[in-house]
Image (tube, rainbow, N blue to C red; front, side, top):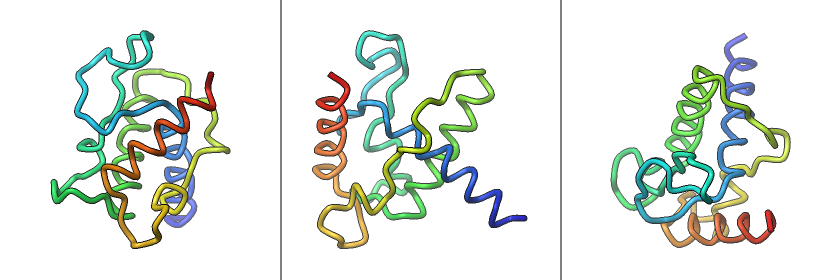
Amino acid sequence: MRTNTFAVLAAIAAAMLCSPVSAQNEGPGMGKGKGMNMPSFSDFDLDGDGEIVSEEFYKARSERIAKHAEEGRKMKGLANAPTFEDIDTDDDGGISAEEFAAHQAERRQQSH
């Protein structure tokens, strides 16, 4: 049961990165003029070491999804959400600020 719970939370969390995100730390209401509180690199780099590892990535997304669910916000695109491996383009086991920003820029381009 715990594995299923984690899988569901990970899947829900995946939806959160479907939205454009900047590598810079942005304040509330900075997302595409829609009044959304967009996550920043530092929102995912939980230990502040300049790199997002898999555990941080999925924990941060799960927490963000839980918060959005609690607020009654819609979570579209969950099934197509990127994985950690999709964003870690150099396959070194960590997502750099540059990889994070490049992924978000690509997502913004896809949404236009």
